Image 1 (cartoon, helix red, strand yellow):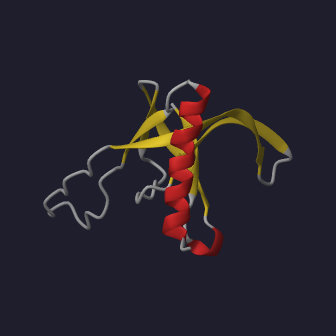
Image 2: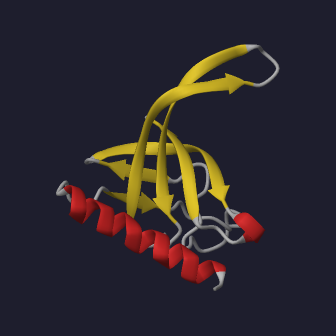
Length: 122
């Protein structure tokens, strides 16, 4: 079984869990920013269409600040790997509120993303 099949099974499991709990799916919308314009004279690229993704709200947790010995709080959302690769600067809509993607952490054994953990902020 390849990574794409495993990612699809994880996505299906997220939907199944939501049904069993009776809470409905937790879906977020990812709007990726347009990238790749080399110079200001290029014709602007059309932004990608927003993508609805199943998600898990990981809540707020303490994050170590490198080289400082301090911690800070960050909000994290884990999303399915449904053929999109989120990047820092993208916008994630959670419960109708837009959040910027501050950091992206792939869960990618053997280099194939199964889930993406995103740190988000307003």
